[in-house]
Image (cartoon, rainbow, N blue to C red):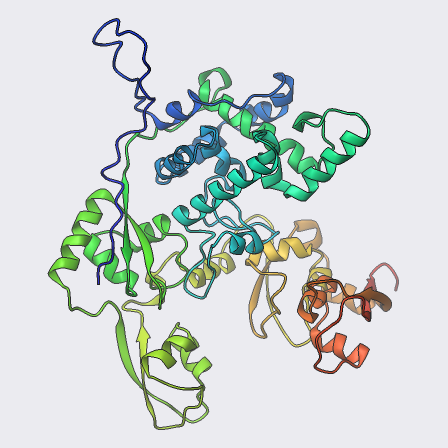
Length: 505
């Protein structure tokens, strides 16, 4: 079923507004419209540094890596017009459209060790605050249109918070408004200036704003710095359409004559083989492909958008097992089959949605990207670790001599979620560590349990505390003889932290 359709094909190229100056000639009276969208952005940039030296180190880095910006500007091509349009519509400085270069290298599948995701690198809590949904089917932080709208709204709020100072707002986008506010307060107490350039901020944030300004300068004068910028035509190349029923991506690909991989590239918020269930979804397609898709929808109004199978429940089956087997979710099975609860019995029949094609065909789905990571190759030694009972990120990191942040980044994990038994983790070890016999080191090392006292803070729960110390919820319960009662702020807990002294024999 086709819902309300929102299209970008009717939007004119971005252009500067006419002024009231006298017309000198028919040529001079026409507004200037750059054919290249990069030029349109940098020609209207307004943010500046106090002096060139503040940008030197960043510009010098790009000069030493000339292929980097070339690759990124090519990668940005499908998204740049849409992002620029949203930034300009909201009245933000146009170079904000370049911020995803700094944040994610304009790669919507980017995932940081801090669990930030997407072009704009939203962490889960901020994403939720700005309406970006994250469920089994969909992650709004990776959705290009939804995340851009959220980032624009967030930046506007930060600009208001910092009284119109865009550099402070951008710094706060990186490190959080609280940190910038504390730095301003500290300078004010000491009688120092409170602009961005004089604040004491984390190293990453001190480099974040200059890097954006450096990127603007590099795109403005690429030849001066030995850069190649891939032009992007200053016209909309994609359209959006609101789907009000769930679609298999294979059917969308068939109707739009587009490869499934291209569908994921334009719609990176999609995590599985179909659009989200039980909610509308805004789909992005190239202009020509959108025309084909709309025509197919009109010609096939009654066709099933998903493929369904009649499944007979077997002894030992559960809804979670059946859902996992068919790559769907329990709520969809219960809804379609009008089940009141999760109780099923052997011999019953259920209607279950299934993908039209083999899972390998959905090349950029979350499961296939995970499989690709596990099968990837690089110069370091690759280890696949299967999670067993008692494992924690802390223990795994110690075992393989890597950091917890690396484990999170390599495997797209969330700190707050417990590890699942049987899940495979990808670990990259440097060659120097890989040469050592880790099992021997572990055997020879002396295990030391250190008792740590921890006071419960507002917002804490057992899962959060367990993840913080790299232990399990069951261990915390056992150490503290906890019943199934909520934790209270100020409550004192005992945590046993394991320290392995690998130097002693």
